[in-house]
Amino acid sequence: MPLLQYDTTNVQDTPNTNTPVPINPLEDSDAKPQNDGLAQALRLGQIRAAAIERLVRQGWTPDRLLPDVLVKRYATAAGARQAVIRVEARNGFDSANARIRLPELAIWLTGEYWSEGRNALDACFSLVGAHASPEVILRKVDDYLGDVERRIAGSYAARLLHPVQPEQVSGLPTL
Image (cartoon, rainbow, N blue to C red):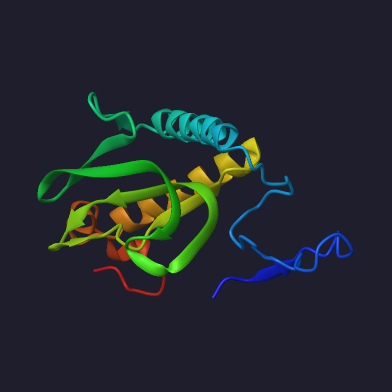
């Protein structure tokens, strides 16, 4: 259930001014939301472009037909595997998890990397609110990429390609 905040600024003007306003607990910005949908859409476009630029600088390649989809290949013991990241604008309920409710538009970073018959990035996502500062945008993209890299490196095929030698683990005798 979302947190509620009541606006009581003009109580004398109308009898019913205590309208619940949802608070976004995921937002890292002090900026006030704008009511203009066009301004929000333009801002989301800027956030999307900044996130994609950061991903490209980290070695991800935009799809030639779908610029919001980026791919990167990883060497594994089972051959090259491809990871996919999507940068999407969403509003309202997340279709995958109906308990997450967003009071405003946001950019979602989601990914796919199939290993051992499952998506290793299934529970890996990031939200960037429409009013996030440039520093917050870059931090959230970098945090998301760190999580993606850890999950891919921890997959079975990636671990087989780069096994840990006994001398790399402290406390084990070398043979």
